[in-house]
Length: 141
Image (cartoon, rainbow, N blue to C red; front, top):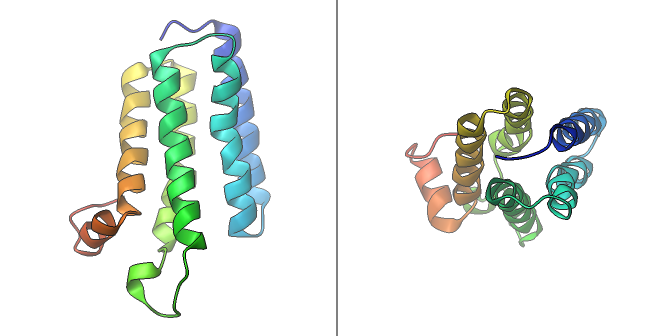
């Protein structure tokens, strides 16, 4: 990724702040709200420096956020497994951010892509068939 150092530093700084806000938040709604700034900073950087990997990062983070939010907002019946959101999905959404920050610090494109793969698997696990595969243990987070 041909990204000037100032943008790497901006992304790392903002994602660290995002991580801090998520850790301090008391509700899952607040945590999700703060998580949205992770792809927000990518979007802002893209306004000044466009790069296909930045677009990939933005899409992976935004889609993971959107799918989990959509699943949370779907009508649910208490104690019905097919409409639940296991804690591991939230934990993964937020813990993968640490991995992404680490990859940015190293400027390691391969590692960034591996983290984005994790986000893609998480996003798929929130879908109908993906959740079925998750429950069967064929998808792990």
